[in-house]
Image: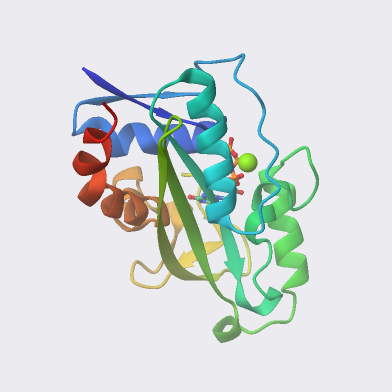
Length: 201
Ligand SMILES: O=c1[nH]c(=O)c2ncn([C@@H]3O[C@H](COP(=O)(O)OP(=O)(O)OP(=O)(O)O)[C@@H](O)[C@H]3O)c2[nH]1
Ligand SMILES: [Mg+2]
């Protein structure tokens, strides 16, 4: 079975990539399998910059082709925040519940139609010491008044998807994986994957 390495320590992302790659019979490995891999400081100003930093550092360390995901929530009424700070919005200890509480507090009094937001995902594929390619995907929605649902991770309980009339955390993993920012980025990656990895040798 082929394998792909995702340069992430986020268990929620790992699960989604496992589902996304399952039908292609590709085994997903992550930094949870490579405990000594270096920590990468996310110093970029954009999702793409951070994804490149993570992918190139880990690809050079493992000397293998690596995919990194940098993603987050962009809220229009908060001028794009939490953005690249999504994971650590309420502090470096990265707590989903506290992050959600902070966003809801900042949006207090903002009416539904002004609570527009999107999830953004940048995927960088690094071929060690050769080249790196980035693709991006988004998913549009609204920030709900209160959390609902228990599936998914991160901000999913407050991300309302209008076409489904449900929050992302109320969708099954199959439903989320059809419409998510991550799935949309991965669809773009699929289109260039064969050509990209062929250049490796
Ligand atoms: O509700 C959500 N559904 C999603 O589908 C989703 N994707 C990303 N996010 C949020 O954005 C941060 C990523 O930050 P991030 O890309 O730096 O990842 P991370 O620090 O968690 O792990 P790593 O991949 O860097 O190791 C995450 O922690 C979440 O808060 C999501 N929230
Ligand atoms: Mg991170």
